[in-house]
Length: 140
Image 1 (tube, rainbow, N blue to C red):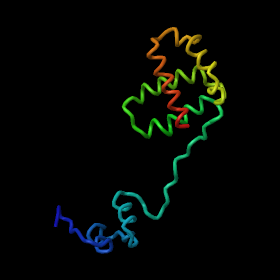
Image 2: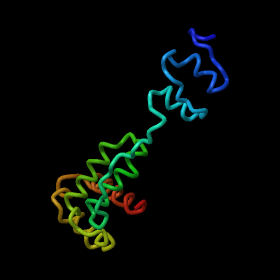
Image 3: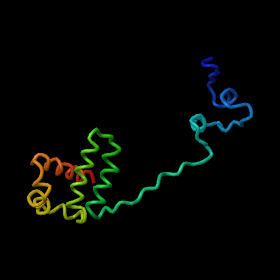
Image 4: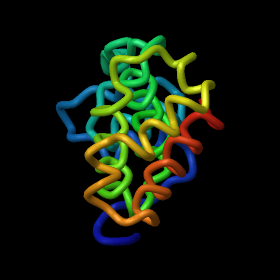
């Protein structure tokens, strides 16, 4: 006896103690259904996965968005805001280009020398942005 509830070892028996007297037991003999019911969900309905828009992976902007959603966010890194900021810089400069253009070093060197962002920040900050691009391309 714990907290006024009788703890039983079977799901069928726990129905007597956990359900209200007028409530039918919907555990249906499965411990998974029992856990769903105890957590407040209806085991008779199947949950629908959240709808996700398909990213345009042919362009750099969609590719970087997919990298952020599929790799960075699930990893729960402490530096998510800084990675989001770096991806924003990359999307601003490379966003409309096809992903294949990242294979050419001329595009990357042009970003390092000709972009306004390169003129505004230190070289270490620029290299952090490029490291984020490298990580995205290695994973993707």
